[in-house]
Image (cartoon, one colour):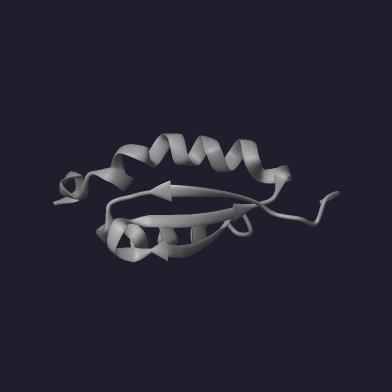
Length: 74
């Protein structure tokens, strides 16, 4: 990694999907770091390196529907 600083992005997800996103990100070692920002509003902050940005945003695009719709896995 050339630049040690992490970029961050704030996302609004369904509040009940935090653990789902955390589980997915943990499956991709060192891809991103997830933190809660405002749990009741479903706002999270995700930190990622510029080296992994393409993979990270590709993953987010692929799972976006599952982050905003709790009923998709019921």
